[in-house]
Length: 381
Ligand SMILES: Nc1ncnc2c1ncn2[C@@H]1O[C@H](COP(=O)(O)OP(=O)(O)OP(=O)(O)O)[C@@H](O)[C@H]1O
Image (cartoon, rainbow, N blue to C red; front, side, top):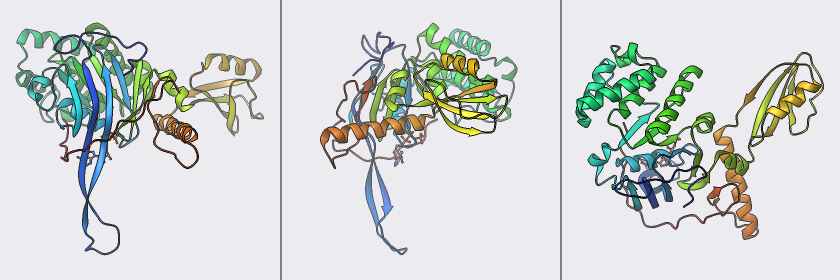
């Protein structure tokens, strides 16, 4: 596997080596669906859903990795296998040297999990009491618990919230509360699923700042699932893209933009209505009164472009729009498919291969499918 640029090599779980290892991991669900046709008496047929399909990667201790992909790509299924909630149908999986599904209790002491859309806190209890329960569940020594709680309270500004029942907290307050709960037992790995979803700009900045410090100061390994590219931009030097249960890309964010040929948009407000702006390095894609939208490659810097526009046009205001993750992935996926089809000849398009590092560098063939078992996953959290 390719450890991304900036990936920190380090000691793994039991000894040296990476902290998270997946080798050809698969997860196949067996679902029953009504057969095609009409009428209420249609037969129910059993179908396989290959949620994770030959996934291989490693994460070194201290890395902060973005794990992204479109809806239904297999991200949650991967995280559920990493936490031991689901058993893989095939392949090999280790976290901190442990087999998650077989050694789930031991692993629980080494990992923390935060789901943006659900809470692991007790709805009717004050935040403080939820933390006391977490301490008992994880059997955290009192001194260590006090130390960790004090740190989280200070850095996440939780002091005034400790006596408040969880149900009375705002989304941003609850998210900070959840992040603290996941860290009270000093986990080696933190899995974060959409930690900034629905948060306002200030709360997002606070959560991101906290995660950055946590990673820098304590070396906590973080696997971050998000639909917000700014989360990745500000936190992760490495990003993995998964689609249809397969690794499509593993590398830096700049390489991802290049692979998806994604574009950012500069929204320019002029002092008056003018013909479309003509400036090198961007193209005007929309004009509405004095407002114009200019698209430019996401891997390029906006600064020289802004300077050029300001020099030649009466600028009133401007803002920058990041590309949407789904859009970047869709473009990357289409580009990969076209490249593969072109290489294989006419009429032979197949699913894109994993791009590593930067676009087009060393495409790897998708994992060979292997026979899979069938079980149903429970919810996480
Ligand atoms: N318990 C289950 N039983 C049957 N199919 C499942 C189960 N859990 C997930 N799947 C299927 O596996 C595929 C991957 O789902 P998964 O939840 O891992 O995607 P995801 O990348 O987390 O998506 P999202 O961004 O929407 O959360 C989907 O097709 C989903 O319908």
